[in-house]
Length: 154
Image 1 (cartoon, rainbow, N blue to C red):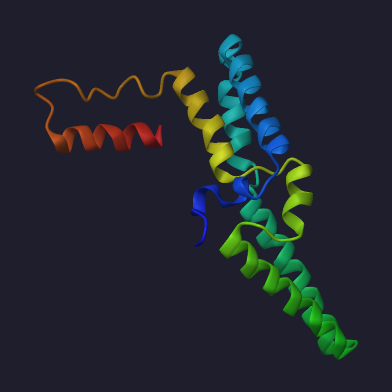
Image 2 (cartoon, rainbow, N blue to C red):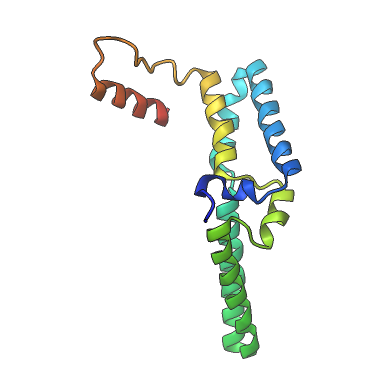
């Protein structure tokens, strides 16, 4: 059975690293609770942070392209590089693990879910979700849905 998409990398990461990422998120949220004027800056940083998927895709594309070019112009044996890299990429897509994952995780590359945990905790601190009133008896399901969508984009 294949692991769930959202948790497959965290499941394939050591408990120690997962605890480190969780502690960093908690530390950031605690800091920003004391310094709310810094929340917008941090949210901007999070919007530009590369997650593990993007990092792996860029790494794999670079290695595959390099191997293809070297195979075409230098020596055909270099064509083994794109074959190996795409095999690793398929392994990652299915299992959430491939040889570069532990390296990138130790370097601090987080999953989208980890980045989003910090992002939404900071947005909650900033008060982005207070506008969401789903308890009013006069609110229709469509209005609640619209309010939820608006809050998710805030």
